Structure formats: structure tokens, C-alpha cells
Image 1 (cartoon, rainbow, N blue to C red):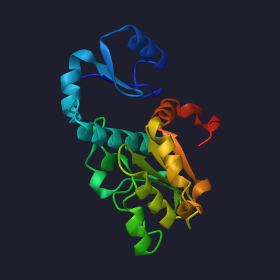
Image 2: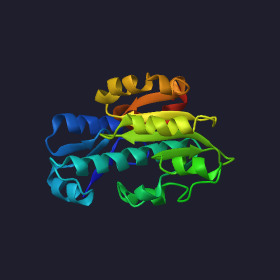
Image 3: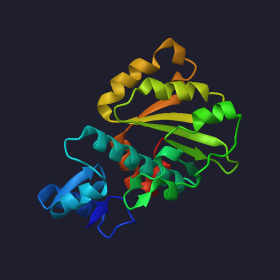
Length: 213
């Protein structure tokens, strides 16, 4: 079973060649932005990742773990330590469990237990060298964005940035929720990032110094 990602330095096929093959060949299918596999291996790939075509729940679970994995690898490139919550640590990102990919299986004790209970459920957290959180990410495929914003609201006293990661069609929903008066204290600190942008950043890690995020 052959998988390709478009990240430089992690595969034998350069990104431009992969795009060319995908564009002109029916032999490869796209699993997600930046991730392809051979059409002849479709059944094996879908079985490996427990994806059932037409089953929204299995697709959501794969998407969730896939983008968590991309965020972890981007965080590592930026010299951040990473964390994913216990309920996600056995989910697969390509050929690895998220718990093996992240630096922390147990969240650093950076604050009081009442706030740690909120932070433990955040999908991906980046930490600096002092084990303080710098970036909080919530991956939202179909679940209510308001729940994630409520977590960010509780964590607003930390010098951190907050991100909702979702399909581009949910951006209007995000804007409606973040503009509610209750979230005014964090409105300027929460950014919406599309799946495609996460995949693009992961594909171009060597150029990230030139990108704003």
C-alpha cells in the first residue's frame, strides 16, 4: 500500500510531480488535501483508516485525526512541544498513533486543575520551552463551534493564540458564533483556518518563516 504526502523531504516524489500525476492519471485518488494513494489500493487504504465511503462518522473521525497529526508535525517544525487529549491518542495519523507522535501524553501542569480540565480536551496544544501553552487548536468537522469557543473563553488569561480548524464552508458559521457578545473578550485572538491551509502549510514547512500564522 503506497501513500504520498506533498511534504518535501518526507517522500520520494516531489510535490510538483505528485500534482502532475494526480492531475493526469486515474491511477491515484486523493484521500485528503496533500494525501494520495494508488487507486488499486483504495480498499486497503480505506480499511486501514477505518473509512467507510458514505459513512459520515468514519470520515469525520479520519479527518479529525489527520488534521491533528498535521498540526502536531507543524508544531514540531516550529520547535514546540505538542499534546493531544487521551481520547484521541490511539487514533491513527498515517502509520502512527497520535499519542506516539505528540510529545506529551499527560498535559503539563501549567495552571490550576479547574482550567486544566478544560485544556485537556483541546484537540492540539503547542507548548514553549517553559511548558506554557502558546497555541490551542480545535478541529471542527461537524461539531458545534460554540463549544470550542467556550473552551477558549475559559483559557483567555494565558498568553496564547486560539484557532478553529475546519472546512472552508464553516467559516460563515464561525463568524456568526465569534461575533456573539459573550465572546467579545477573545474575538481578536481566535482565527479560523481551513483544512486546505493546514495541508498547504504542512506541505511547505521549509517556507513557513515567510507565512503568517
